[in-house]
Image (cartoon, rainbow, N blue to C red; front, side, top):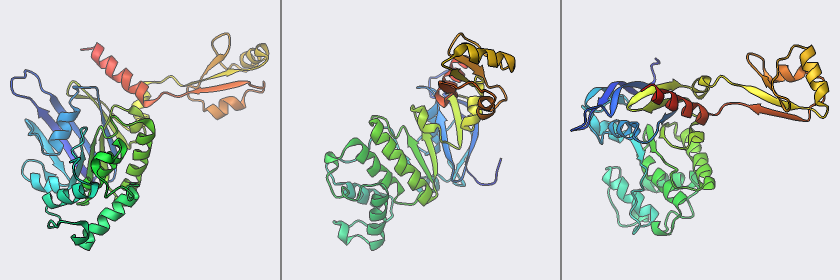
Length: 316
C-alpha cells in the first residue's frame, strides 16, 4: 500500500432491495494517483455497481470508500467536483453544437456563468475548450451540430466536456463500445495523450481486453467478488504455458540436434519447445540448424481473463 492512493475501497458491499445476495461482496482495492486502472468482468459481475458507487450515483450498503481524498458519503459534492465520467450511453444533446454542450455542462458545474455565445464566455473558458479540442483532434468540429458528428467524435466531445473542470480521476465505462476498430485506436491514442498532459488517473471498465493490456493494474471481478488482481503480467501468470514453435527445411537434422543437446521438444513437425525458465533468445542461440519458422506463443490478457472466470465459475 502506498501513500498516493487516489481511490481507496475497503470491504465494499452492495445489496439491492429484494435481493438475497450481494451485487458487490466485500471488495477491496486501491488505485494510485496517475495510474491507469482497469476493472474487468463479465456482464452482471458488479462493475457498473462499483463504478456507480465510486461516482456517487449509487449508495453503498457497507464498507469504506474514498475518492481523491474525500469520503463518498460525507463529501459527495467534493468527490463529484474531482472526477470526470464517461458512461456507456452518450449523454449529449444532439440539437446543440459540440461547444454548446460543453458550455451548458460548464455552467451546470458552476465553472463559468452562462453566456449566449462562445465569444462572450471568459477567455479562460475559450482557451480551455480550444486546448482540449486540439489535443483530441476536434478543433475543426467543435462548433458543428452534435447530430452531424460520428460516434468517435461524440466520444471525444464527451471527454472534452468531462475534463473542463480539470478532474483528478476520469472514469471510463465502456468508452469505445460501438466504435469501429480505427476509431477505438484513435480514441485511445488521444486518451493516453490526455492522461500525460493532464496528469490524470484513468479508471476503465471495458469488454475489449486488449484495451486493458497497457494498464498499470487490473482487478477482475465476477459474481460481485474479486477473482484476481495485479499487473497484466501478474494476471497472465495463471497461464504458465510459454513456448515457441520451430521448423527447418531438414526437420530430421533439427530433431537430431535437439536430441543431442537435450533440448526437450514435442510433435512431429513443426516442433514445440517449452520455454520454462529459458529465454527465447537463449534457446534460439543453442540451435545451429537453419530454421525456416519461429512462432512465439505468449498468453494474452484475454486468455488469462477467460481462464480465471471459467475456473472460478466451475468451482461454484
